[in-house]
Length: 274
Image (tube, rainbow, N blue to C red):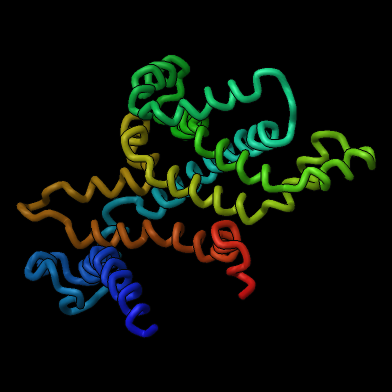
């Protein structure tokens, strides 16, 4: 039994260590003075640890503004995706209407098209509508990509017993009330997990943000980090770049910590209660 557990857990621990190694290197570089970062790139403990890279990053660029921009845009995109995908998923799971399966597969088929295909027409639309270099340009075109979210929502609502909704219908509850008061409260762990997935996806949008957000003060943290790659005096700002990378993980880490119980319930029912 012990040997079997070792055969399972040792490879998993090794894989986890390999996955975690780059994060340790980033953390070490963030606290190492910039001129010493490349002295030993694989060092896991920083040379002469200090907060100089963080203060330097905050002095050079509006890093906290970038963080605020990312929270604003990622939050708005997440809310928009959930507002569209949750009712759609419920409708596909519990309502009966003509063309339901065909429409569902059409929406699902959008997942096969790379987002880059829509960049040019979306960019032209943003410019012609006068939205260039605004948060709306970042948020609105990013919301409609909901194929996965509709699929996930549909499968979540399909697990709800029809008898529960039928009882509410007999009591006089309409479709909207059944969705808001009965169905949605019973799938909150799955909604929380979907929200985290949507937020992470929106947080990491890079190419589109680079195209439509021009002003330095309007950039998100993901696109702002790239500005530290500029050479100054023959030396790249690796230390401040790594420090900004560490700061960029904090809101996402906080979100995960707040939602981890619901995520555990969504993907492994009963885990959170054990």
